[in-house]
Length: 117
Image (cartoon, rainbow, N blue to C red; front, side, top):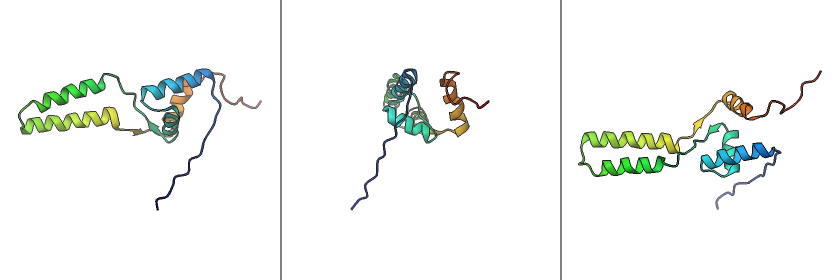
């Protein structure tokens, strides 16, 4: 028998502006909000996929498939596959200090804990 993964819900408070920002960023990356937040929390930097990226890669791939097979065509195809992977698939692991710097820039200046006097 296969093991079942336990799923746990995590709830947190966010302002309307923060929720809109999360929703927008998740949509740009083609993810649900929870998936986006989870990946960010685990240090991944999901990529925003440009709407025309698929069309661009499809056109380039079709152009290559219409050429006669040669070492140059094979090299061009491998280069294109690397570009597709880098643009659409690769999730770069981001160091925690970069994530903190990025998220801090999203927050209004008065957000967070106040310092003790």
